Length: 190
Image (cartoon, rainbow, N blue to C red; front, side):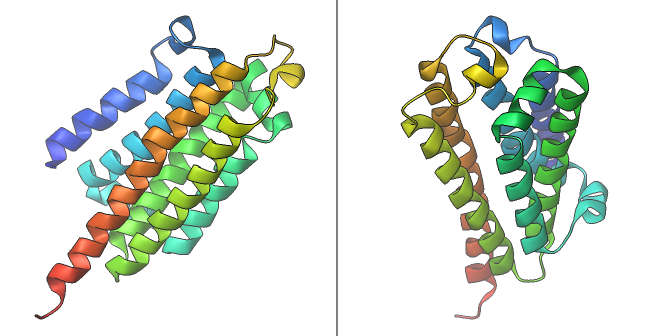
């Protein structure tokens, strides 16, 4: 992917996350998940590819980036933080910024790693925890957030959000990890 194409993809994902009124077309939780996936699985890697100087500044050790993203993703899906971000403007803005920064950290760290296999490991680890959270959201027997958010139960919306996480987040990190594995295999003498 060229830098120009990556920049267009990143800008589109950021516009989708922050400018499109997704709640008018999707269930609230599904809209919430589209925003998250647009930030961490689309905008962040595209920005890292499009803006290598930004990527160098955002790069952290691979496992540190993976840990930060784990903490951000799981932390903002705890009921109290989730409700705050859904009901109040400042927590919502903090959540959105945290997702983008965590995504930049994990992707920049993985793509800038001295050893591509280390980067692949960080992305595959992230893919695994996203898969687990997506599966928990899909398989939960009840809406985990409706009571704390003061809204009607919408288990189907939560399940759709979990499926979106599985369908967008999991493959994005898996493909990134496999790309880095391929880079390692190409670099090895035959």
